[in-house]
Image (cartoon, helix red, strand yellow):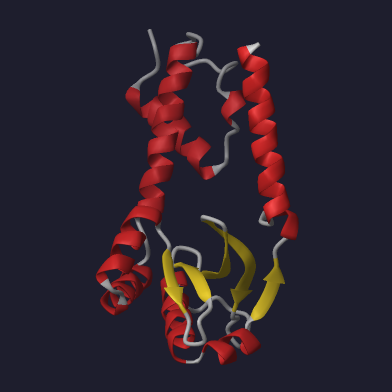
Length: 189
């Protein structure tokens, strides 16, 4: 006889909270003394994943209000990008190409190399006391307005983190394509 539904939920919540490691479930026994089977373990993992997804969807009210404000400032194309990819691409007032992530408050500078855009720098603006007072979407609103009105001031004010150039330059893309061609030739022979 497998465990009760309450036991399943309790174990799943303990995994979602990080109290219980997933690999610790297997040697356990249910309250009636029967062993936890592999099927039970899969059901508990599924419940834990569902619990984690629900928690991620439940945003604080401030973040929800900030997302509404951000959506009101976006064009139809940017709204579509936000829905599909959870990021917004825009051109700054000085012509730079940027990508905003309202879920994290990150800003990335993009460069086009061939048909692809690559993140070459990331920017962040910190609150005065270092306290994360603003929700990430509010930070994205501030970034959006600064980039659209005064991009040079944003770049001068923000902390810049350079990305590794070997991740986006053309040589990396050529090596990747050569490796793919070689792998395909090996599979065919």
